Amino acid sequence: IPILAAAVRSGTPILYATLGEILTERSGVQNLGLEGLMLMGAFMGFSVTHATGNPWLGVVAAFVTGAAISLVHAFLSVSIGANQVVSGLAVAMFGTGASALLGRKMVGLTVTGFGKIPVPVLSGIPVIGPVFFDHDPLVYISYGLAFFLYWFIFHTRPGLNLRAVGESPIVVDAMGLSAARLRYVYTLVGGGLAAVGGSYLSLAYTKMWSEGMSAGRGWIAVALVIFALWNPVRAILGSYLFG
View 1 (cartoon, rainbow, N blue to C red):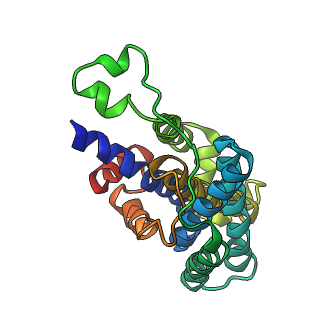
View 2 (view 1 turned 90 degrees about the vertical axis):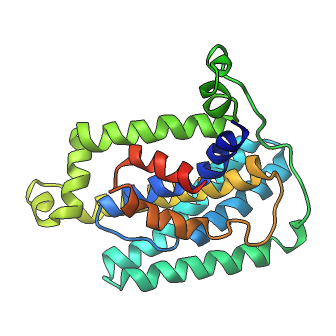
């Protein structure tokens, strides 16, 4: 049971990054910069939390940072038509280097971060309770986010538009929607979620900052998108398996 519970905690940052990349790739954009986004999210989340004492502000700062960096990737990939692989690798290298440079003075510092909040009743269920319902709030949010995105992608009109823009942008433009605008939106949201996954590492998993703390989880998330067949619910299984 402790091993399974630890797998859930370890897989949560991968799950956030995978969900973000599913949205991005569903829109027809590939972002290989998840490793850099996670590191920048971990750094920004930690630094803001250290300064304010509020981990939720740290999560928001991480999301905004991830979205801002992804805006550059979206501009290069969507507006200019640059090679998405090259642009994504540039994001990964930038995030790795920038987080190491900016976070030099914060190595070894700690924050209060997020603590465990057992879910009443559910946490008392044998085996299932301690494995899934005895964690911090970001773990619970990841559950809901995965199922929400599944419903959104496969059972809503905006989700249909998302799938269409990834498969046939010409059809989306013919419907009076802007394929480029949709790709921008989902690339930014996907990058923000990847950064939130990074903030989980520094605010809940370790509650400290260290250089390169994502340790390849961003690359694992890129592979998990294919493993999950771009399905948010399957991403849960894959993330916990690798966790």
